[in-house]
Amino acid sequence: MIEAARPSSERHTARQGEQRRVLVVDDDDAVREVAAGYLDDLGYEVVEAGSGGAALEHFENGCEPTAVLMDFAMPGMNGRELAREIGKRRPGVPVVFVTGYADAEAFSDTDPASILHKPYTRSELAAALDRCLEGVR
Image (cartoon, rainbow, N blue to C red; front, side, top):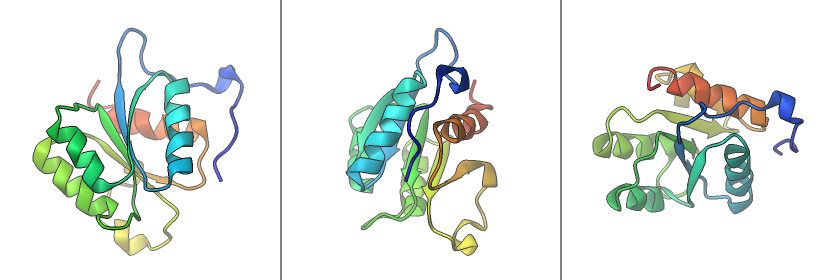
């Protein structure tokens, strides 16, 4: 589903000297674990949540992520609904939607730069975060 580790020559990393925190939200434990591993390899601090509700609890408990990487299709609260709720709690936090979902209509009002399609590589994940964090740096 998601590629194995690549040689360090292909690694993108958080900028030297700065700690970036990414909240990873995915209801699939294995997918979330791989994403967290990639992010850790790339130099990001990782906070994990297995649902939209768990992600919102992190915000309520003072979590201040630099960005949120979230699955779009989750039971209970989908990625669009979660992004809306996060926007109420922390306006302007960049969100990258991860999806295997092919319905383009679901993303018609979403910046294509903030969509990462499954399966993805570590390099693609790094590029997606670079794009979404460009204005935050």
